[in-house]
Amino acid sequence: MKNKYTRRNFLKASALGAVSLSGLNMAFGSGTSSFDKTLETLLNPPPQSGASVIGLKNAPMKPVRVAFIGLGNRGKDHVELINALSPEKATIVAICDIRPAMVTEALDIINKTTSGQKPDVYQGTVEAWTEMVHRPDIDLVIIATPWIDHTPMAVYCMQQGKHVGVEVPAALTVDECWQLVNTAEERQVNCMMLENVCYGDEELWLLNMAEQGVFGTLTYGEAAYIHDLKELMFSETYYYNQWRIRHHVKYDGNLYPTHGLGPVAQYMGINRGDGFENLVSMSCLQAGLAEYSKGVNADNEFFDRSYFKHGDMNNSLIKTAKGRTILVQHDVVTYRPYSRINALAGTHGYHEGYPSRLALKGQGHGWLDKTKYDEYWNKYSHPIWTKLEAEIKKYGGHGGMDFVMIYRMIDCFNKGLPLDMDVYDAAAWSSVTPLSGISCDMGSAPVKFPDFTRGRWKEERALGIIAAV
Image 1 (cartoon, rainbow, N blue to C red):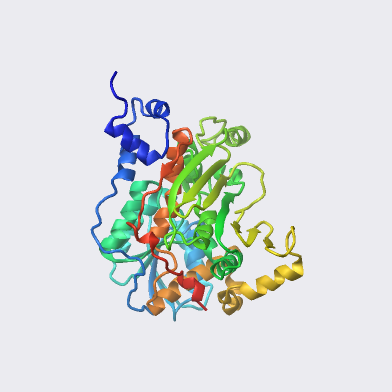
Image 2: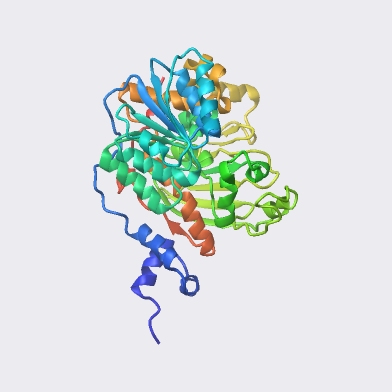
């Protein structure tokens, strides 16, 4: 009998983790060329062609000259916040969107203020942005387009020597994650994923407590994106060309992990002393979108459809090199109230969000009462929220976290400091989407994470935001 343990199957098992031989043979039957290519990328990362950008510092820029690609739901918000920092800290050089109406709205936001900015406009064609980013007077490009465009645009901008702030997720495939890493290293530029939740007041409070040992040895976390988006996904106007629902047609897995995962990864020092090791993922059946589709307008492209691949709820469980685990949930279909869970457990305490509750060693068997909770809140709240209190109140953005994120990013450029989040964070957090899809397709087999830092995740290093004021 021919030995079924071929080198090819052994390598596949290595990438997938512990999979039974019978399951391996069943999983890798005919027609697996695209899957083979994905596993080849996992097993054989591309060679490094530039130096690491961990701790990358650039000469101070003041003001930072900013351009925008995409002026829709998120893009307009970013325009408003960058405009609020002009002219001293940042200036808006140029803006671009394929839709003239979005350009007009962005200009209206600027013109209603006294900033006096008059950015050049690029619009109307799918390639207009490429002309814009060749300009020599741009330092930073902010990308807020549909997900599928994030990596191609970010890579092209970095190739022109521009720093990039890209909306979440930064990439959709493992290969795209490597493209971001390699291009940032080749060009020695920043690629920061604009994960605003990492700058929330609750999240920075927990980060401070974790750093100062309040939770003891960290062991476990939970993160999520739970947000009923059915109406918006079926809308023919909210998402350009209904781009978001199209992902649910084609893909299973955790499509949007970073809002919940990013902060938990920072609490645990992922890429800064610990690293993601492997992942298992499973989804429940798909029912919510199919049933909802029966009630939309008959001329809607997705009326009365049942071909959605993404299950109503995805659960992905990550194991880290230090043995910690993180549960990451994705649910944009059920009527479960909004939550990112934001749970963190350690040997001395536990926190859970929505609503925020804290339990600590020596404080009894329940949640801390309000008086005690407030003591910890006042002691460990991040000072940047106090410093920016007036601006946060004026400009807001998801309760203020958007303004804090944009302010902090621009302030780091102004001072020549490393950014709080780098391209390795963008790649690691974004890779949950394709890896969870692989795991789901393989019957919830464990899948190993690529090491985008090439071993440097083992180096203990503090986040810059910890000491920021």
